[in-house]
Image (cartoon, rainbow, N blue to C red; front, side, top):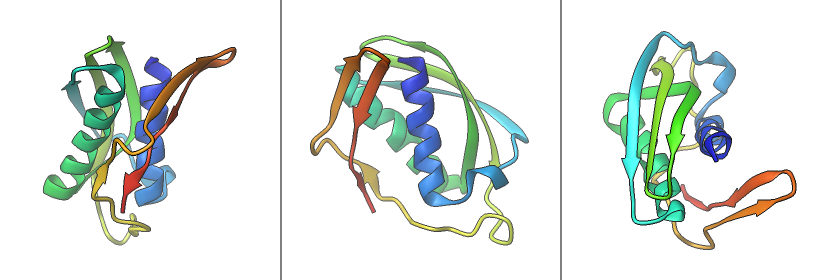
Length: 117
């Protein structure tokens, strides 16, 4: 589950810009809470969208320390967006609940989530 949350956040930022250009210059502790695991994934991703919109923060490394059914805690690394190095590919409005699903298979967890652009 920790890997699923880390990969979801990395995928979100790969939609915004080239993740390889985001330096791990700053670290920040991020927590999110929700009523269940699916809502937690939405809250987790929406926290990153909020940080990008309000503080122009981009993140590329996600050290998810703990995930329960209702809470996630992570140390994340990134930097402030610089237009010359981080051209924006797509703006994001929010992670949605539409067709949201987390499943466990033989190779681990898998999520399907739709982002509002």
